Image (tube, rainbow over all chains, first blue to last red; front, top):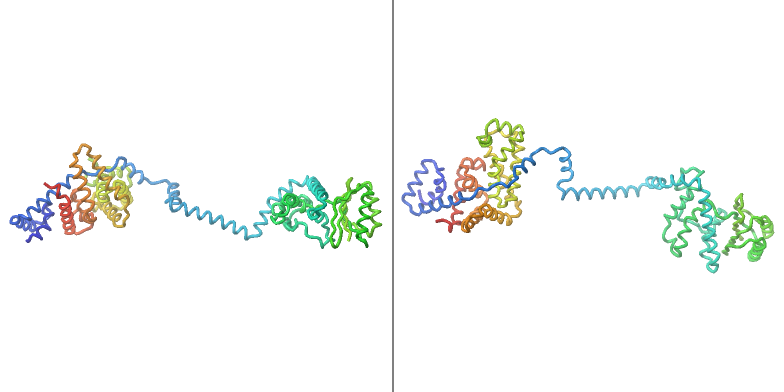
Amino acid sequence: MNCHDARESLSAYLDEALDPDERRQVAAHLEGCAECRRELARLEQTVALLRRVEPARAPVGFVDRVTAAARPRPWYRRAAAAIFLPFSVKLPAEATALVMIALLAVYVFERTPALRESARQQPAGPEAKREEPSGTRSYEISRSMGERRDAVGAQSGAQPAPASPALDATTAPPSAPSRPEPAPAAPPPAATAPAAPSSSAKAEGTAEGRLAENRQPPAEQGAEPARAAPAAPRLAVKRAAPSADVVAGIAVRDRDAAERDLAELITRVGGRETGRRREEEATLVEAVIPQARYAEFTQSLARLGAWRVDAERPDLPAQVHVILRLP
Amino acid sequence: MREAEAGDAPRFLDRLRAGDTDAFEELVITYQHRVFGVAVRMLGSAAEAQEVAQEAFLRAHRGLPEFRGDAKLSTWLYAITSRLCLNRLATGERRLRRQGEETLLRLADNDRPDAAVERRELEAALHRAIAELPEERRIVVVLRDLEGLPYEEIAEVLELELGTVRSRLHRARADLKDKLERFLP
């Protein structure tokens, strides 16, 4: 056996892990080789050093931790772990899924008209029922709002344009197709509430007015937002219940003369003109006539031209609000 | 004497296989330091070693119903632990390597507060020299010179030929001899 082979076996020789034949050969080589004997001694000292290493000890509480971890967990803990663990992966994924579901729900809602309709009807229904008994009151309120606004329009006579919405809104009979549409933002109540009973038409109108207010496009509030904002519900309400007590047309030959005569007549019967707008096709005159002299007013009016009533309330108030159209 | 140490008594093995929690606790108590010792020498970090040692016992717990008793319980536990350590080292799943080395040095200090500076130096040099060995040699020297396993058991634990165990051990010791030269008489 040479030195190389002997040194390969020195470790096992130390541990007495060689078979007897091998062991004899190594022993014979060591007998005659001082270098290999020195090597064996160094190896033996190294192993002795290693065996002086303090044995490692598991930390305190290790047994408890292991036995606790080995204990079978109740089903709800296992389920929670399956759903949430590891937190760093599953929580963001679950949050993302939640957001995507929400977005999908909004998308489906937006794309499904039937869903939108039912969502719109739900708030209108109970409100209409609640307001049904006070439907007349809401009409009165909206009417008084209209009058107040009309008065403002009359005061700013130098600015006929702001007053025109009131006239447009109140002169909305179907016989005046050339007039601008008063409230394009508000769809007809029948379209939004087809199943609503006819007995609650006024209340529906009020509710619709509120909805119209909510849906009012910003462009319509552009010029005078302070005035346009309260006008929106009123305009929509007037479609269902016009604030004028009488709406009539008079066919005259000379419009200028008729305007003058009408102004005189209004003054004569103790009334007052609250608005006037002259357009290419017709002049719209708005006036308030005392009910006591309304009969006299209509008789005198008939002398100005062919008198045709488009709408008239059966029970006229003390101050009759009249809108006349002079073509 | 604990049943676990009494040579894997059949009754103890039956209790373990049946899922007896007391028997499992006894197994952990008996082998905790040995399993942890192999892990900490192999990984160099007490925190990682604790993690691996716990995992080794949990795997044993799961595998106990199928444990046939062909090998000794200790051999089986060493085999699970060695495999976990080598896998962790091979997959690069290493954390706190530097911190681990410091942990070992600190452990040496704490365990022997009365030790002389030279002694602490030797301990540190030994730990460092072992940590620097290639993993397949390190596990053999740990099992042989620190845990005192016979060659045959090491071969069984690591599923190696006896000759491979011998040659790896020899090379590991030769490396350590060179590195620890200044501490040899």
